[in-house]
Length: 352
Image 1 (cartoon, rainbow, N blue to C red):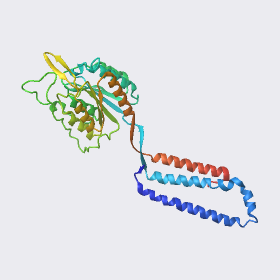
Image 2: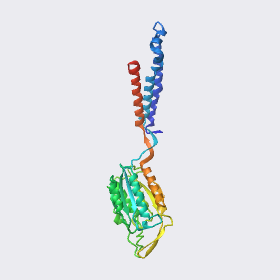
Image 3: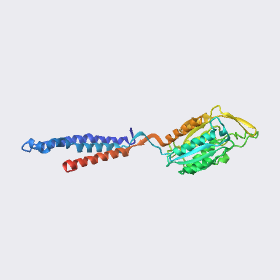
Image 4: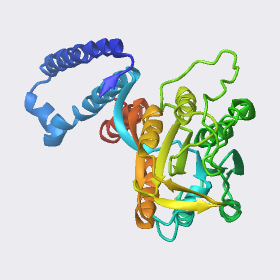
């Protein structure tokens, strides 16, 4: 346990001074007791229990004062508390490579099944938004508490060409911070003159940097009101650079948890006369999670994917962090002070 204002702990010197004062007061009281004709009369008047009970209220009051001094020093400790992730953005890859069957029945169906389970198990107080991305990214469902709207958005997904992972991150970030303006169209590079595989799209470029006045980056992972969960096979083929997009999320403290779906070996897909091997790009997804102080999860099968989402749900509900516990100390101090007063009134008809 630490303290935000440790210098105020110097006030604890008052505690031994009060103890010394109480002892002197008790000695003085004994001198007054000698004026009685017999000390036995005093002892009989006090009774056997009164001699020790009269010290209990002052002891409780002293304990209360000690706790109050500790409280004003603002103690902090590491505890596990319900997280403040009030908004979760699910960014889901709907590119053609998600048709691969290396995850049964295929990548997209396994992903959507796990997403539906995640939505069902997420606390009802958490808003969930859906972003889909292929060659571009779009908002499938703005953050909402209505689970039916979220599930309906998932049913509308259609697979498209190319994969703009960076765009998926940026659009998700804009859902969290609507005031951010990105010109995603201008960030896409020009197509290669020699042509490109229609499944792969064009090379990706650095994302556009929004012009924000007085913007100051914050530590990665420090924004506790929202998080992004990125589900993809990780093979970015167009749009903004995914890692650079992740850095923009990190500058705003937003964590981007990444879920890799598929296998490292992948499989060969054919479309419109083209064929290509679609593999899981774990390195990119690990890098995105690392930059934003989040975690990467591998989901090689539908069963693994469901477990991943259950793990993510747990992480979004509970969070271990340093928390100020001043109110706890103040509440305990108030309890002891009240107890001291009540016992004094009950036993001696006076307050201390």
